[in-house]
Amino acid sequence: MTSDGGPHREPTLTIAQVSELTGLSTDTLRYYERSGLIDGVGRNAGNQRRYAAADIAWLEFLLRLRDTGMSIADMQRFAELRAAGDPAIAERLAILREHRGGLADRIRSLRRAAKALDEKINHYEELLAGQQKREQE
Image 1 (cartoon, helix red, strand yellow):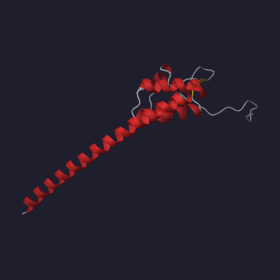
Image 2: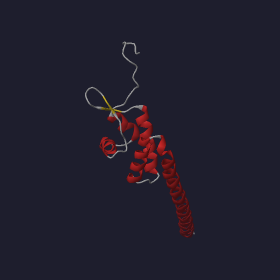
Image 3: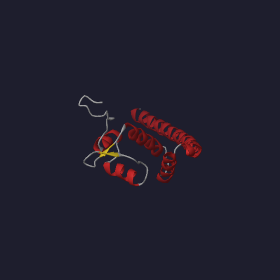
Image 4: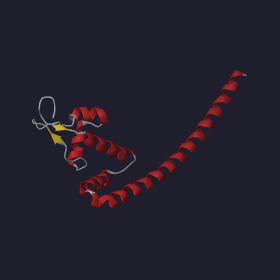
């Protein structure tokens, strides 16, 4: 019970607060809800969205999936399986393993690209240094 005699309620955040916290626009948050990525967001007496800690944790995970290149369709499939509960754990694991494998491939590719850029930067730095040296002579 709270000090006013009412039941203890978990602190919640408004959509504007969640937007500020996550960097997602309020429109994107609403889209995530409409598309099935987020479900069960609570509402207050005025029917305004109220996000609980579990909603924020789930959004943060979705952002990690998005940042690592998972498609919205795959995120939606994962969200459906999450909503299905324990019977879908193996399928969720398979999706994450497949995504992690693709991410590892992308990381290797990005490292090769970074190495090529480093080599080109070094080449141009050497050219510039030689040019500056000739100008000083």
